[in-house]
Length: 320
Ligand code: ASP
Image (tube, rainbow, N blue to C red; front, side, top):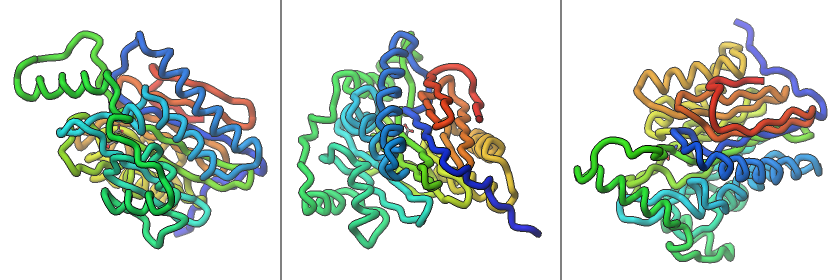
């Protein structure tokens, strides 16, 4: 059996792909999503353009989405069963396979930054809850009040969800958004290195202490220069059970699958179990893929060869 290698790096080619979650979106709010995606895309691209690393680009793009109340990460994250936000995030460096992640943090404005600090400044990969925050405050992070993260829209969504659960309201409300607006970014830098990062508030009304796929390396986030960088969004339990992002890399490494085949196959595996969502991926050749099985996925890419697009609806399986 010959070992299949991923497409060789194209010298100098760089770029990134971002997502802002998958699900059913309100058409009226499309512009808001597009504007948020474009701002994050440009923030990440500027880093790459100036010769920054893929990890730095991922952080810039994800931070922009975390600070934007439209998306389910940082400020504007969804609320758990107790009515406050518990945030998960991870980052992975495809060159060194170093990784860092945090789960269930409640007072950190940019969990992606803390994930990078876990990667670079702790001997561990994943810190959870109080311990993660203790580490952050020791590094000088500001303690944000829980209210900073809670927006009126998320409060309403949470109340609707709870009313549905208690049987007070049935069926779908017209134009209601159902989505798992996690944010993520995968990037290829000028040096040919890949990175991936993901950040989320998880699922609306999730149980206290529930951790999703986003901070789990190989489930919601994975990067390896030998194969690809991937960030997932969707019903995290299914992406954990299929070890989705690592499975994509494994199909490429062991079977020589293309990026578009590997990503589409793994979304099909998620679907087989009854799960919904999508992934974004990039490899060292600058090929990208963004398949999903929901109605829509907030996604955008920009590559140094001039290709650029930002989309919410249409075209479920997309590779370049
Ligand atoms: N995958 C995330 C989770 O399950 C949710 C999302 O993608 O919005 O925590």
